[in-house]
Length: 176
Image 1 (spheres, rainbow, N blue to C red):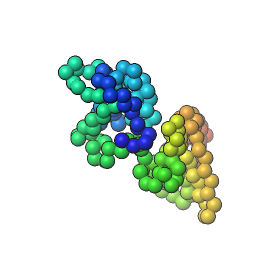
Image 2: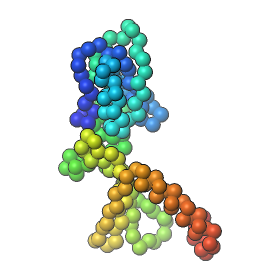
Image 3: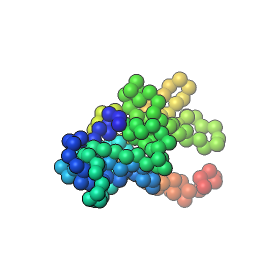
Image 4: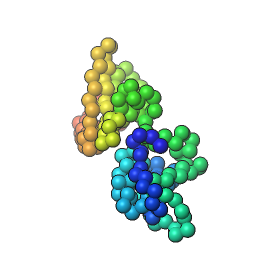
């Protein structure tokens, strides 16, 4: 297990199974005692996985802190290093001091004054939250704007409103 997904381990018999999902894929199960379920669920969620605590069959003998990765899930195709969020590119995170998704360029298929890229970033600190990083490049100069997920969500809606207004005002057919 990686450093960000260090589940509590007390050696007691597990009484709760936490199903770990990426997107719609059941990828792993973590087993905990009742005392460690809330903390383990928080650790899993901070690692970028969806956590769903469920009951455990009486005949299942797993210790608190045990994790089983399913061979058919999306985590199985990667090393079982859950210290990275599922969207992380896993390239040199320690040197950068942050997890980073693959960068996506905002390509409009026409010449633009600036090159704009967007990516998810998250500090390596266990309390780090995912954020959206917008980078604008013109020649050798670059500027970045980092937004919380909440700010990015509101920006998405504000941009949609502005694009609708631009469409309504007749702009020579540039907006479709």
